[in-house]
Image 1 (cartoon, chains in turn cyan, brown):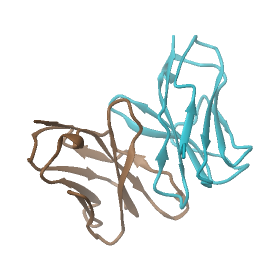
Image 2: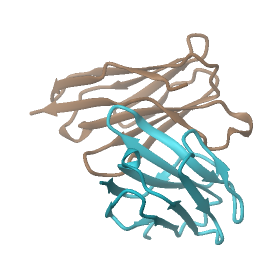
Image 3: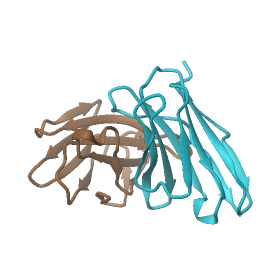
Length: 111
Length: 112
């Protein structure tokens, strides 16, 4: 059972470039989330989804977009990357909607 | 508003006890505790719902004081495997779904 899988694990972007992070879960969870983690800041919610075809803004949504076309996948997009988006990104999913099951993270560096 | 965890870091010898506190300025519905080892994903430890009930997980337990808007995580007879960063996540309940607001984390290091 894979749980929550994030791809890629590492990525380096130049300022202004775009990219998409993929999160896939095989637990049939309704709820999915994207968090970012920065030193001394804990985890901050970017966007979340309460079901296929739905998305909503979290605490720090600016500069990011998301899509949930299939129940098992939740995509996080950066249209024009900025150095302030250098972070570790965690995807999570849940059933009820808690507790959260986290993926192993994507380390993104924007130069 | 982000909950405040204290202390920021704790260093223990195996077998010693520790307490990690999590305080909020907002009314709480539930408190969630996660542990993250270096380079890994956070892992769920326990949830405490409104009502103050103390939950346990092996030698790790927690309490939730609604009046004080505070939760405490108790680690007794610590083991090397307890090392990591502990996060509390707070939910306001209602339509907030899984919108947890996490504290900044407490780094726990257990030495032999």
